[in-house]
Image (spheres, rainbow, N blue to C red):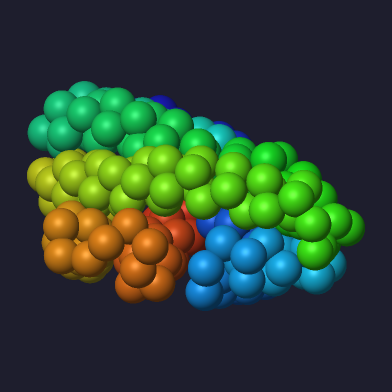
Length: 216
């Protein structure tokens, strides 16, 4: 029998994407208060755009890694749920990007317009636009968290049935998936708890990438 050496590309994408997203997430300030307070926080945060572009670049890297995880389950009993997991994850990452893109572009420009114009009518308009648009991004992120929870549940079944990776990774996927399914149903989209749920997603994907590297 010929041993097949799998490429490390997908595993490295998953690890690097999780690290990039995780470090950027830790550097991101917690936005509290009304729109004016949040815009002031954004304006004085150095590296705001770098933080959000790191988040954005981390998302496709992690999706590529999950695609590799799915490919690793071809011709195993876990192939079906692995493919379904990638489809759901693609939708989840796309929804996740909406709020990050808004904050990297419009949110940053509104914050600097507000800081430069306060007090004044232009600052009032900046706060109004932010208050009108930001809830849409937060709602998309709430949906993304729920969708990614479903995706991880499917990956848990894929790993459990396919027996390609350690069993503890599947139990971790079930636990993280349950957290990310329940949290969006239990809390509002502006709740900080949602970000803790997302942190468990990133941690699991980082662990899965390390497992893929060591077992390829």
